Length: 498
Image 1 (cartoon, rainbow, N blue to C red):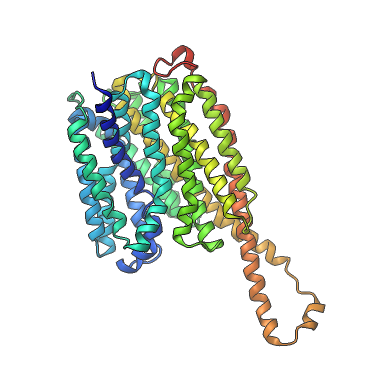
Image 2 (image 1 turned 90 degrees about the horizontal axis):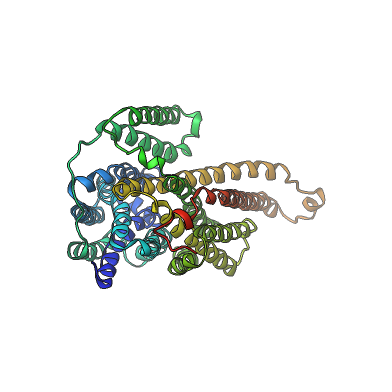
C-alpha cells in the first residue's frame, strides 16, 4: 500500500516529464525567426524544426503500449526521459538546419511515450476512488504545456537566446529522472511478438496524414500531386491496417479497445477537444503580433490567463465530479468554451486587452472542466491490461485532432483573407470631389497605399471572425456527444457517484 507522500512524489516526477514533452510542441514556435538566421534556413525550411518533432512523436506514440509491456513501464520511462534530455541538449548545440532537424526527430522519438506513460502510471498509482483527482493532476500537465509554451519561449528568446528553448529541458528532465528512479514502481513484463506489419501500416498512415496537413497550405492542397499522394497513402494504409487487425492473430492494437463504449467515446471526444484547444492557440499569436502590433512578451502575457483558467478548474473539477454527474461537468465546460469563442467572434482589431484576457480565461476554464472528466470517463471501464495501448491511442487522437484543427483554421484564414481582399478591393472608389480637393500629387499617390492597407486590415478582421465562429459551432456540436459515455452511477466504479 503506497503512502500519500509516495503518491505525491510519483505524481510530481511524472508530471515534470509530461510537461516537458508537451511544452516542446509550442515553445519553439516564437523562436523560429531567430533560429532561421542562425541556421541559415529559408522561411519554408525552418518549419521542418516543428514538423520533424510532430511526425516523430505521432509515429512513436503507437508502440508505447507494447514497449511498456515488454520492458517495463519504469525502465521505458527512464530511457525516454534520459533520451529526451540528451536530444534537447544537442538541439541547443546545433549549428545547421540538418543537425537541428535530426536532433528534433530524436527528441520526438524519445518524448512520444512520456504523456501516455504518465497517464497510465497515475491510473495505476492511485486507487480507483482517486482516479478523478489523478486525471486532474495529469490534465494540468498536458493542458498547461501548450498554453504556456509561447510565453516561456518568447521570454527565453527575448532575454537569453533561442538555444535556451531547448536547454530549459535539462534541469526539468534531470529532476524528473531522479524522481522516476526513486518513486515509480515497475510494472510486470511479458514477452510477446511485435506486430511489425500493423505498426508499419499505422505509422505510414499517421506520417502521411501529418505531411498532408503540414504541406497542404503551402502546395494548394489537393491541387498538388504531392497532397493527392499523401491522401491515397493514408486511405490505403488505414484500410490495410483495419483488415490486418480483424484477421491476424498477432495484432498491434487489441480490438477489445474498440468494444469499450467509454474508451471509444473518449477518443472521439478528445479528438474534438484537441481541435478547439490548439486551433485557438494557433490563431491568437499572429492576431496579436501581426495585426494588433503587440511584442512577443506582451502576447505571451495576454495568453497566460488561458492557462490560469485551465489550472483553476482542473484543481476544482475532481471535487465537483463528486457532487454531480461528470457528463454535466463536461457540458458546463463546453458551454464556457463556446461562450468564449462566441465573444471572440465579435473581436475587431480595436479589441481591448481586457476583453482578450477575459475570453482567454473563460475558454481555459471551460477546457479544464472538459479535459479531466473526459480523461477519467475514458478509462473507467477499460481493463487494466489494455491501459498501455489505450493511453497511447488516446494521446495519438488528441495530437491528430490538434494537427487537423490547426491546419484547417490556418488554411481557412489564408483563403478567407484573400477572398475578402478581392471583394473589399472591388468596392473601393475614390469620389471625384475628393480628387479635386487634393492639393498635390503627393497626397494622391499616398491614397491607394492607405486604402490597400485598410482593406488588408479589414480582410484579416473578417477572416479571424469567420474562424472563431467556426470553432464556436464545433464546440457546440460536440455537446450531444457527451451522452455517448455510459451513465456513471451504473457502470462508473472508478468515479465517485453524484
